[in-house]
Image (cartoon, rainbow, N blue to C red):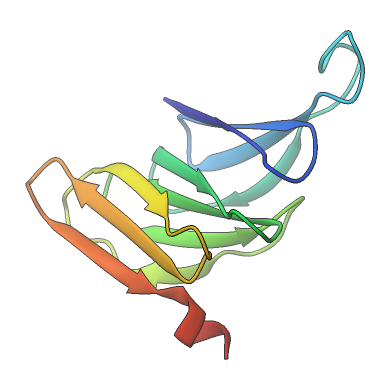
Amino acid sequence: FSWVWGGHASSLATAGAPDVVVWPFQSADGPMGNQGVVAGELGAPVAALAVHPKMALLAAGAADGEIGLFQVPGGKPFLLEKPHEARVTAMAWSADGALLAFGTDAGRAGVIDVGALMR
């Protein structure tokens, strides 16, 4: 299970299933009485999340190593990493949002130049 607070809107993204759900927190009651919005889905349970520092984007890493990039509030993921049988356990964006670093439980680590993909 993973969760992360959204940086641009008062929201909380949660995972633990293949779906990433974004919950609104615009009032003092939090998400009570509101529906969560499915931001997207990967092929395996999502194990790690990271919110882009400047844009309404969410990176999600799955139990099978797949990494997807979602527009928030919802949309089809853009595949950044194909499944490779190692659970993504950590993710972090660079301050400018151009780079996404990740690590897996098998000791694999990498940096994806998302900025280059967006040009």
